[in-house]
Amino acid sequence: MTEPRIAPTADVDPSAKIGEDSAVWHLAQVREGAVLGEGCILGRGSYVGPGVRIGDRVKLQNYALVYEPAVLEDGVFIGPAAVLTNDVYPRSTDVDGALKRDGDWTAAGVVVREGASVGARAVVVAGRTIGRHALVAAGAVVTKDVPDFALVAGVPARRMGWVGRAGVPLEQVSPGRWRCPAKGELYTEHDGALSGPYAALDGQDGQSPTDKDITP
Image (tube, rainbow, N blue to C red):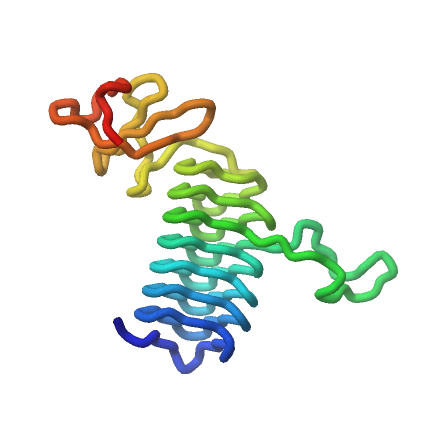
């Protein structure tokens, strides 16, 4: 393990915690009380708000903005210029015309579960959850929670398919059965949710699996 690398032009608050083997590149800002795990990369101009919690091996690409109180679990990827917002009903002023202050609204953080990816210039609306290993396409606007392994795209984002742990779109091999073309892992779909992965038994090769053909 090595000490974190922090570029001279980065702005890291003294109360923030940066894990070993992490790198904070030029013009990135990490606000007070934020916590980054081990092996993270914060690209040029990225922003991490006060108290944000980030797990291990997380990547924030250039100019990604993560507003408090977001939580990013292990292995999350946030693409260039993607934004995780925190204000459900944003206004600059209150109804009397006075400038709103911190105490005038309640921040609602985005949660990104383990291994999920948010593509370049995507926007995730305040308070939403991105499920495990899900993939948000570039430019999407997420207004609803995203299920585990879901591939979502568009404005507003809608599910277009499923992805596996490798991030590759899954291939349907039979009703309710899906296979990762990159890893051969098998998944099952039931009531709009995906479970797995499972390993194919010898000789099955992931083709048209049945319940007895898969092992956890």
